[in-house]
Image (tube, rainbow, N blue to C red; front, side):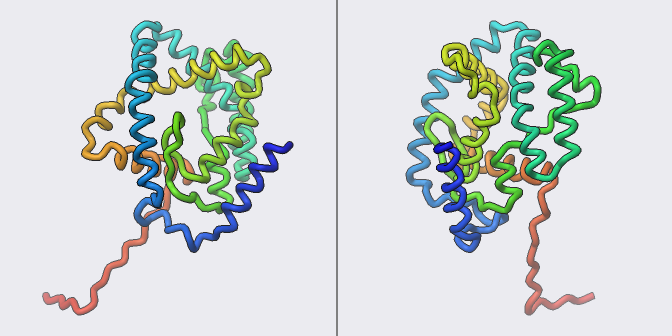
Length: 244
């Protein structure tokens, strides 16, 4: 209960800061802590280059495709447990019903989730997390930050990530030995699926800016369910003469 109280207090403090101090989402990225973020990005990139990426590449090379599909499906089924309350908290009741049906079908017919039987029935994954939910509620994103070992986030998404753990069956599993091994496997599998984007990061003139922009745009896309509002374009025709 104490940890949940800390989370709630933090959200209240964040929301009480007011939108006036937070630039609109259609302006330049809000990154006042860039001087601190960049060294953390360098640390994360080095950690990834020499440990996480080699593990992901090795796993991708050694594991047969059916195994990789099964691992991804298993973890995606666990994530669905968290999708359901977030759909409900956002007022997406039909989505919550679909994700509940997906969870039931994949858990029972999909042998614990290793087979995605629900997709064949037309029930696709519809990810929703607490970071998205808090944004839908109107809480400001806050500054962009780089977290050691976790990577890019906003302040709001950091609270969301913490809240997600309470609806994640993997984090709630009592056997810490099994839980920790599964968490490591999930991180490695997540990294494996990001391997195709490595070249773009390496070739970017500024990898920090590239990752920041990619993260913020993706989060905006998710918050608006793939349909973000079109930014207003102000055209100034003052003192302009138009002739036929």
